[in-house]
Amino acid sequence: MCATCGCSSGGVRVLTVGHGHGHGQRHPHPHLSDHEHDHDHEHQREFTDVHVVPAGPEGERTIELQQKVLAKNDQLAADNRQWLHERGILAVNLMSSPGAGKTTLLERTTRDLSSKIAISVVEGDQETALDASRMLRAGSKVVQINTGAGCHLDAQMLARGLRSLNPPAGSIVMIENVGNLVCPALFDLGEQARVVLASTTEGTDKPLKYPHMFRQADLVLLNKIDLLPYIDFDIREYACGLRKVTPDALLLQLSATTGDGMDAWYDWLRRRTPVPPD
Image (cartoon, rainbow, N blue to C red):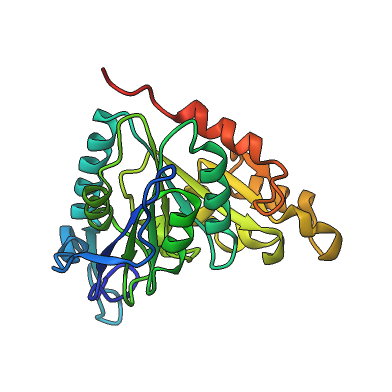
């Protein structure tokens, strides 16, 4: 049981879905490549200090445990980050609520950019390889991580995914985190950038309701702007709420379905993709 968010740590599976670069052979059926389960949450309980508050007038006292949460995860994340840096690989942690359009965004991104730069995808879901199969058809090299009852990816899961993917130097690894606006924000994976994808169908209040997620974002993408004529959504109100939560946030508006606004997203990726080492 995860002491941070309460999700179960059991049942994590890494599935090798196939290699979908260019016009090579693709394998639409997932193959289990990592049978062992070495994911634990001992890092959740590394205590660093204990304070005992003196008894009050009623004779009661409170013991406050100050603990270093996620210590092991943070170390593994640092290892991932170093591994990626040495190979000149940009890893982007894409987070959103379910149905915001993460997979659709990655499908179009892969189709539009794959001729210019290699894009690999780590798909995080509790069950199934449905999204991984979509990415395979789009032309990405994919690994599927099923978290079972878990509600987020962590650094150890990503490390296993990277070993399976073995992405080339100078490429992009897109990490589609489990759909959730809470727990993924708590776990450093070792990525170089965090992107929060929101959609117009979710309402204008999400930055205010889920401030921690939006504060973690290097970029906020507002998706499904093609639906604006048909729904009650105020972009100015949304942007105002976002500024209250994180004043320096960059907000880009786009539609992954129609392609509107995608060029700005691609430019953002290109500016952050490192030059591969010699």
